[in-house]
Image 1 (cartoon, rainbow, N blue to C red):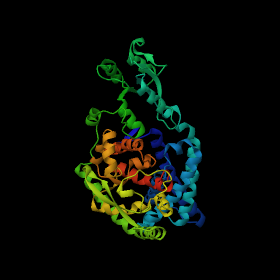
Image 2: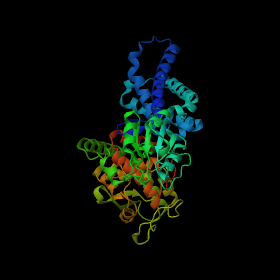
Image 3: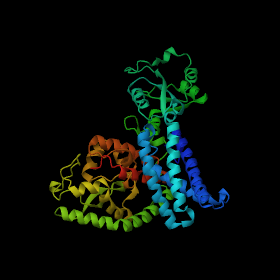
Image 4: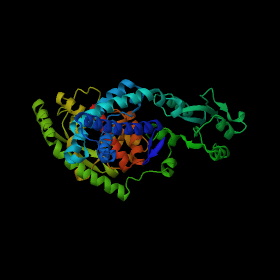
Length: 462
């Protein structure tokens, strides 16, 4: 994997994205040349069209990222990839229209754009048809040797067999575990030189997956492996990279303390984030005001009670604040103010409420909390105080999610379907900790773009 601004991107995805950008630039040039040939116009040198080509390629590339063209499901299924590409090109057309409105000189004529869009769809589909099987082949997967044969090694084995996995386990070495669950593991005593064994397997990485590390670390073996040029990783670091979350089953306090990250509170990052929040919340509030008012009117017409409601949430450093949302449940949804988890097909949700939840219109009034500085656009979702009290006692490190400002959307929201249970909160916390640990403006941009996918394909909204 390639680490870009502290975020891990699979090699296959990076290669595909670079090829896509080249094809998109080529499609833009084709559209211009074809239209020029149709009307008999003389063609100037290509460097005179570079800004327009770049605007076209970047617009469509951002749209492709936004709708999940590079997601595991799209990489594994040509049908899903084709559907997402068509949506991306449509969204890219909207991006081009916005650019034309703001900076007309950066876009092509509409006739050029039509041909460029058609060429882009054909080229992008052909590329996936050509590379589809190769992208998921062994050539793009890292070869990994696992030191350990217990339950942690079993988790790595299961993960390696999932569709879209970026690695393949080429060998297991049992390190005297009392509960051995990997039958094919070779005992360490049966290997004369572990470093030579790793090199013979042509492994690029060794993952330490011991059940008990105290007085069990094979330091001499690990040093020799490291000096051969093979990467050595601890299981928590490996799982963070492969899954995009901090694995609570394997992590320990020392790993959180000594690993890199948790820099979201640095002055430059905080200042950039705050400036973006102010500008974006103002723009979104102005643009979405008619939609909010229509939603409020629909809520009032369907059921008795206020269109908006305030609810107490836990924010930065555990401080409480009130969020404002469009009401999507009956007024008597909670008896005596007692917090209740939302359920699948929750009967308390009104018909209008179900619609505005699906398209996330009920969340738009929270832009006011962003403008005031109580929330950010991107961050962990703020929970209710009653839930937080229970979750902090039942889930380790839950309080650490409050070290960053809560957000309207977040890494957990785009990677994990809506959940309302202790186990769901545990999984969402793993993504929240990853975000807090690896925060960067790049990751914020990625989350904001992929929030469009969540809105367009609202899986699990309740």
